[in-house]
Length: 221
Image 1 (tube, rainbow, N blue to C red):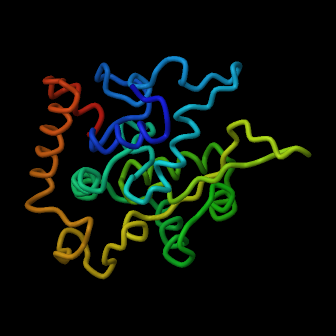
Image 2 (image 1 turned 45 degrees about the vertical axis):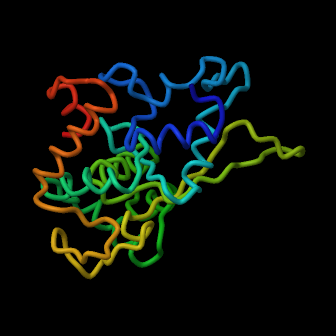
């Protein structure tokens, strides 16, 4: 069971790729692996994985973003790159998404506040634009910082995220267009996007114990 940032990090590494919250694949989430007394409960003041995810992200070997079933998930580079190969082969950014990617390319990262200013939209629309890019595996969470508020600098779970590209986060070569990437590229995969999909389905099925392809595809289609 997950009871600390360290055990949460270890669980993510062992799973390879795993949703944050409960989903159609029963038992396959950080939420369900967390001891109940440590799961986020605003009334009780327990932050648990909601806070521990920051340490996991800042470890440097974990990808975090909304890339499984449209909701938050964690992955190692080994398995994120397989999902990315599949998604890049079938999904393209729209005009708003391309503006965000161009901004990240010029500045290294982007915040939701900057997305709002760039697109001239409200927060909900900015969140949607970033979420769409995360599902396309073109953007990931680059960092999350804790916000300390009040005279006593109290931290109650308020956080601010920034977003970047997987290439920038893991040092991939942006000059090699997908799928023709160099062997030194940490995001490079072998074979076709369809083969990446099959490897990913097999892995998640093994880790989660789910054998129903339709259910698994709900997460990664």
